[in-house]
Length: 292
Image 1: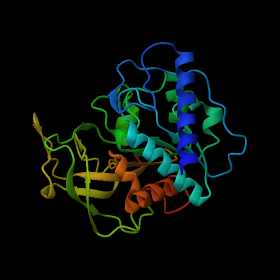
Image 2: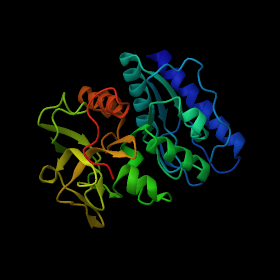
Image 3: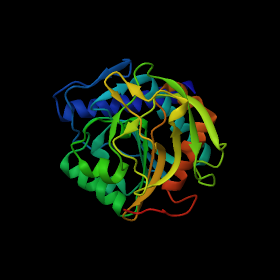
Image 4: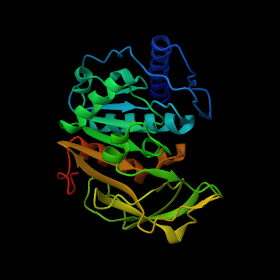
């Protein structure tokens, strides 16, 4: 585990060095910092060097932040995703370099995981490459912060790919115990869970339920926690928290769970992540019930 931690730190640090040298503006946090907010976005232009032996299925683990950054959770989740890939025999590549979003390199991956990403990350050319990748049959898995920005400059990402606009989470207290209700028990990401799942997290609320646009796999019982922030009531009524759908020929999965580093030591959440990647890659499960 210690060697793997070092390897992931090294990969991420190299990615940040590329970003700084290619676009020498703004501020990039180091892997030694804690919670912070990156105020000036950095856009990457120098493509990373991918391993020669990326055997299929190959997973791209992308963890760049141009906004909120929770360092401990990002490291824990990167390590957890690598552990999952190794246990399943999947190839993987971990990076914070958004220049990997080009047609030639993306086609080497079956799934792209946006792992606790934040802020505006891609140039227009990179957006087009990623959109084409997903709509052409690529897989996408968004984890927690990947759907947690209060505003998005790229509407396709939030309206079509994620499918819901984040509006906030409770602050008093920020982390609460709540009950998750599983709605599709035989889904690859849900099949190891009981019908209800009580756990502590930072619970996201969205402007409207995406139900009808997506297949809801699990929802939140709002009666088991206080969905309020100091300035607004975050109650949704119908509160999906994990869902999936098709985007063109591609498969998209989103889980709003996983703010804290401790989430990535929970066996049940690791099963959700494993199953989500397996489904998005077309390894397990059926196609999509809802295709916008």
